[in-house]
Each structure stands twice: as structure tokens, then as C-alpha cells.
Length: 302
Image 1 (tube, rainbow, N blue to C red):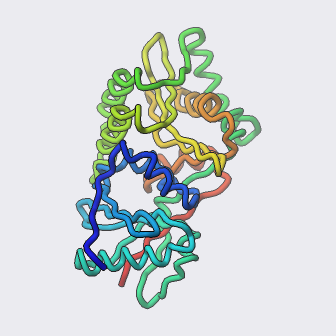
Image 2 (tube, rainbow, N blue to C red; image 1 turned 135 degrees about the vertical axis):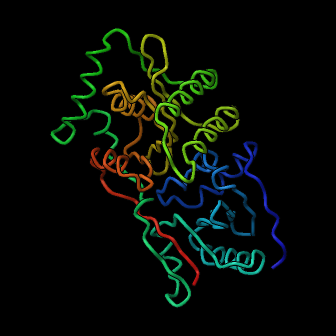
Image 3 (tube, rainbow, N blue to C red; image 1 turned 90 degrees about the vertical axis):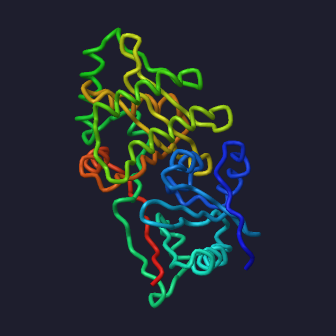
């Protein structure tokens, strides 16, 4: 195969990329276009085309890797082999493919002699019933409802939920900086810094990259915000970002509920992404009683 031309991920390419993303809907957060923009610097994202799809080439401090190509089911095997050829012959390394959905693993049906295919629990997505997260009704959500009620009581007449847009960029970024400093999360991959950079990037380019954003104000000051996107074919809201002042009881529960209610009225499902293997996050995501987890796999060439 001839030399592939690698392209940077740019806001102006959104509509073209959207077309490629429409080929498959495996239900993972990585299969949503906004996620690619949010994490483009973290993955140092590049891509190239062949005549069947769009193929990713990522890199970080651990080296080069890729994810499942954006192509139709029937073209997955061909695109997979194209990527393998690129890794083996242009980069001179074995193929590493992460965050692969279960359906793709079945379609590829790879030989055990050539590849290790391993479940990666830390990156399973959590999927919930949207109606239940909006109402928090029933015994399972009793604690969550109590937290929301405590918030409503403590801040009666002082809070307001609003859908946000480009014009709210300065206050969202101010809040994000404060949140980061207070949380002081230590992570060898600096994911929090990259996430902040990704949020800034989509806010800077919000005329070209569509998304939904909502916020909670207390005494006129932004104290929580959330960013998401909607997949109509799956009737699924994808919640990519959710940040709230951790000292305010019930605020996380409140924005979670209000953002779904106002931002995604037609959603029947909610994908709240993975827990990255962080114990506190896993506990929080499980406490919302997911309907199911979306499995993901690593494919490592032997």
C-alpha cells in the first residue's frame, strides 16, 4: 500500500467526520464525534482515509495505538488489515487497538495465534434508563432524591438551572479552573488537564462543533456545568463532562437530573462513559444503577 497521508482533527471537518461516524453505532462513548474533539490532544489524534472509511492513528507517552476504524460492518476486516499494515510496515511496530466494542470483536473474529483480545473493565461505559435518572423515583434512587431535596431546601430561591451556549464560555472556564485547583487530582496521564484543554477547545470552536451544555447558578454564580451530545438513532444522551462544586450537597445529583430533563427530553438511554478504573468514580456510577455496561476490549498483536 502507498504511504498514507495523516490529517489533524479540525473543527471545520465536523460535518465530514459526522458522516463517517454514522456508519456504525456501537454504543460506546468513543463512537460519538464530540468525544473525539474533547480528547484530541490527549490522544494526539491523527487520521487517514482509505476507500472504505476513516482510520485513526493515536499516540501518547506509551507509544502509538489506534481504535476501531469508522467504517461499515462489512468493511471492518479490510480496514483492520489496512491499519495493521500501517503499524507493521510504516511505523515498524505491532498493532495495538484499544476501546474496541464487542460487536467489532465478533466481526473481526481474530486468530488467537496472532492477537490477544482482552476485556478492559476500566473502560466499560455505564448506560442508564433516562426516565429514571430524570425522576429519581423508586426505592433504588431514594438516597439520590434525598440529596436533591436537601439541595433544593438549602438553596431555595437562590438557585437556577440554565441551558448554556457560546456566550457562557468565560464563566465556564473560570469555574473549571477553580474546580481543578480544589480537586488537585494526581494522575500520571494528566487526564484532568487534557480534559480541561478539550473543554476549552470545543468552547473556542462552538460555532462549528455542536453540543449541549447546561449549568446551575447559585446566587448568580456558576457552581456546576455539564456537556453532552445526543445520538438520535440510539435515542441516547451521552454525558461527556459533569463538574460541580463538591462542597455543595446534592449539586451533582441536581445537575445530572436537570441537564437530562432540559437538554435531552427525547432520550430513552443515557451513556455516562467509563470510570477509568478510579474507585470513587466507579462507586458513584454504580450507585446510579446502570441498565448495563458496554464492554470494550484491547486487541494487541502478538
